[in-house]
Image (cartoon, rainbow over all chains, first blue to last red):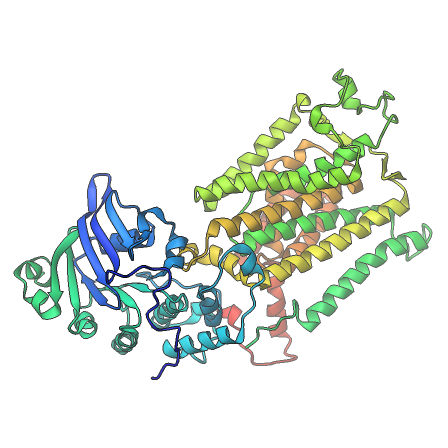
Length: 266
Length: 374
């Protein structure tokens, strides 16, 4: 599939200062809920253009980490930075979204009463304050962008369908499409293939491979086959009890004794 | 793709125009034909329809927040009453020295032995100043209340309960004589508005037509809003608020906008109500009144704008008949109606229309419309 999105899909650096090569820094982040440490001195950074897979057993802190990055949860101690300048701990969810971080939830979350087209339109990068939204009109370039994303997520022809009627896999893709409409620099995907059929999983892997290099992507996933397919030679991070247990190429991580003990060998 | 720019389909425009025309014709029939003529519309009937239109406007306002944004307010009666009181202040001043005590002060202030108007009655002898109050006071109350409630991310049933408490607290405040709004009697015995006698058929007709114009205008405004991108954001607040936040919208701003707008529309309904009904007292703020508004919306069909208008007319029409025929049974009938609609007519009266269309196989025989399968 060829994509002609000349400027839209290249790695954008506007607003985000990535001079040091990293788009996301988590430094010594701890999140405690009533004494329970969901994250425990977690330190992690993601480079520009990297596709990073995060694996770990249930309760390892993967979702909490995403919550910290997207402003849903505040770190108890430690810092989270987007580029050099955006202090994520001080920003609201929608400010973080505007800065350029898009998040896909574990359960597909789309606007079920809206059509596929309207879902993408709502997500499109633009002034999202009240008054501009009231008077917003789609330009033909914007319609073209929506059409391009529709092709990419293989929902062209379905644009007038109500999103609630889509299959589980289609909803997941629609949600990814919505992220792309935001033109984010960093995409967070929480279990993008959970509940998908094998064909859908393969298709999603294909989709992520197409996005590789165009965005920085962080994927949290349980499905080891899927991780192996998309991680390729890139780094994989294993989380355990709120901190990094191991980091490296998939083969190395899978061979790591501690990883086998806590996760793979269960 | 059916993303047309017209507010309504052609058929809906025709129906809307026809309904507006019929409604506008009633006062003409009232004035043109003498009592006893078969085409005569009584003043009582005119007052009743005028009152229903005020209720319909309030229901429309409520639908904007409940039907589209998913914020269930059980306190919209407060905004309705505040609008009515703001207009009522002018109407009280316009009585002049024609009150029972012949004082420039309203009777209730004479009765309390007050010598002068309290400070917040300043300038209320000016009609347009009071019209400004109609919009600003309820708007400000709604804005401040909404800002705190939405900022604290109070949602769902908790929000509903707080709105209920708010209107209840306001009712208790307005019941006090010292508040300066006539205590439990409220405002009544109005004589004139802008120099015209309030009972004069010409005045009543003007009020009626103003109500009709504002109701239709509000319907068009609301329809334009819900069909805009902002309308889709509001529905996003209702259906998946967290998704909306993570794609970069600030739900607080959108909720505040629609909440304040809804309160102002409701207040305008109250302001139109008071000269036509001739009384406003704190019982309008009782929780039961606000709940009744919700019932109009639910019965008419929430999230349809037209439905709540139909619902307000249907329920209040039924109420007028019921309270005359079986006065003790009205609340039971209302409760039963609400239960039946909730159980069997989820989309309210308006939801029945597509069903009827399906039974009558006229046009587009085999269209399985998507709404029905949702």
